[in-house]
Image 1 (cartoon, one colour):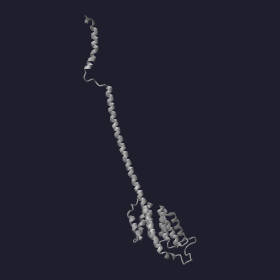
Image 2 (spheres, one colour; image 1 turned 90 degrees about the vertical axis):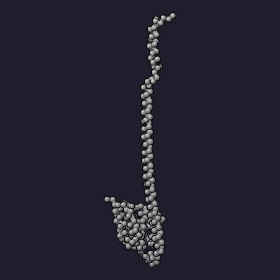
Image 3 (cartoon, helix red, strand yellow; image 1 turned 180 degrees about the horizontal axis):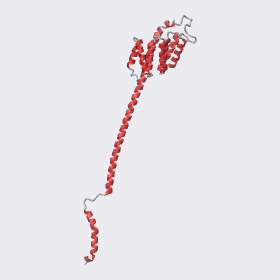
Image 4 (tube, one colour; image 1 turned 135 degrees about the vertical axis):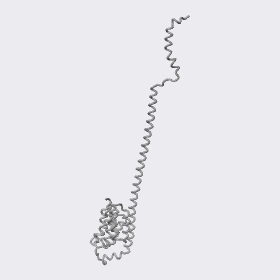
Amino acid sequence: MIDLRRHWPLLASALLCLAPLALTGCESNPEPDPTVVKLNDIDERLGRVEKVVNNQSLLQLSQRIDELETQLREMRGSLEELQNNDETLRKQQRDLYADLDRRLTALQNSAAAVGANVGPAGNAGSASIGSEPGGEQAAYQKGLDALKNNDLNGAINRFKDFLRNYPQSSLDGNAQYWLGEAYYVMRDLDSAAVAFGAVGTQYPKSPKVPDALYKLGVTQVDQKHLTDARATLNQVVQRFPSSDAAKLATSKLQNLPPDAR
């Protein structure tokens, strides 16, 4: 038979060692691991940061798209403006050529009267040495043909030659006017303004004076010389109130912006 009293100290030590384990096993809600808690908190914070970053990126992307769309609309507006300007220039050229055809027909009908300025057959009249074969009518016609065919440099040279070779011709005012038109279509506005202005100063009795004065005003508008343009166009209306040029000048005046002060 075992003597428990003799082994009691050993049994007491064993029971003391097992007691914490027994108590731990009986707990129903153990304390969470602090490391796990910290990791979960960090993960949650990272999730919130990612959401904020994603939302900011989407906002920036949306703003960039809006900016690009605005730029695209502005570019389309500029393109439409250029197309309108190009169409305006083309219309001016078509109107010019239509007017040329009308005037050419009138010149052909009055060729006999114009030819009388050359003098009797066999007499060169007012034509100078080096003038165009066929007389001033042929020389003037070649300038108009060059202008009608959009040979602007050729037209300029032809009209300059005409004015030099036939200084007393009844067509000098017309030639000077069409010289200005050729410069205007080339967008050499300074030369066009000089040429149009010369019609009134050098050929004041020419029937082209009202048209030349109106085109001088139009050229000054294109040069941004609005004060001069307004004065010139008003002069057309005052001096030639019944002319077609006066009607055009009135319309142009109504569309002029205010003078820069």
